[in-house]
Length: 416
Image (cartoon, rainbow, N blue to C red; front, side):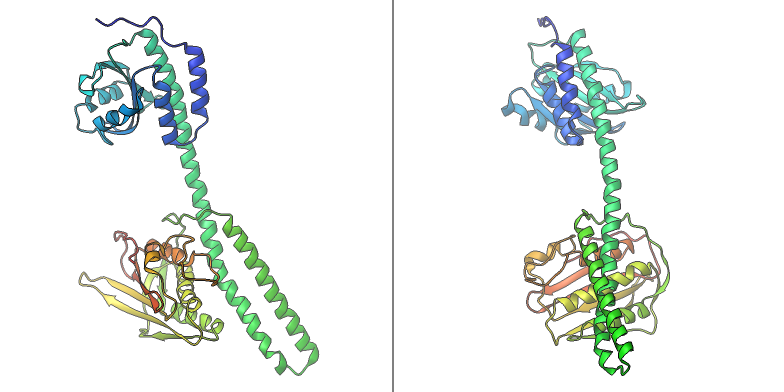
């Protein structure tokens, strides 16, 4: 027959230390691990924490055993999800009743489990359940129950703080994303302004009037200098952000013809690419669709600019724009940008759409690694498709498919 231990651990000192440790973490998983570590051996031989996703679904988050070599056995008994298992029934009952319970857990190789619900601060729902498991030498009495309840209250506060921290972090990341994509996309027209100012310097000698020629030179130098300063400031700002591209970017869709946008992008890039030929092929008279023009402009600039940047002087960049009607009656705009440049190494292909990732063979070619990431962001927000074919040393072809007359298509990852 089991005998009750003389006293539960010293509540005041134990709870003070527990509160201090739980208050030091803002990460959900770290808070859960801390809870299991605090529970053993003070409140049991082992401890388990479950997140309550809904009234019928439990997710096993962490486990702790007084003997580290047996810890994996405790975790393995329940697995990452215990929904539908016999072991989940008492846990769900505690979650629904919001009352602690002591149950027998012989099937776990232990004797008794004390299950305590973790309530939200408003006490209107159960967010988790903590299981304190004991062997045959411990019997849970009133002192242990009070201590467990007090510890769970501290844990509840830590969970709420971690949840709020995660939400705040998402907001910050959203703002960082917007800032970073905006900075990167502003760089493209800024480069065009700088390049145009430099080209206009070649017209100075044709101006006979000396004062006019001097003023033109001064103003062009000022434009060039200002563009350089702005570019430097934007680059510094860009490096200060942590870009994680996702769907949460402001979008404004309206009827847009992709043909004039593409023609303009080709013309602007050709002005800057004096040693390359950019050819627009197979273009229909018009290709209308419901798109965000503010995103398509930098997408075209990024694709064509990248093709020029990573190609040798004297080479040709082909831009092909066409319409594709599928069997379901859908209309797609298909854009292909093909170059004869350095290509992308096979080992880098799976990562070409990741922010800040660049091919390992770019050498001294200047870049941020955000061009294709920005393109993928635009394609994704338009529910389109994107893939790249490339052979190192021979060139790259990037293909974009945008739905012209339908939205709500399932998103697909980029194909490499």
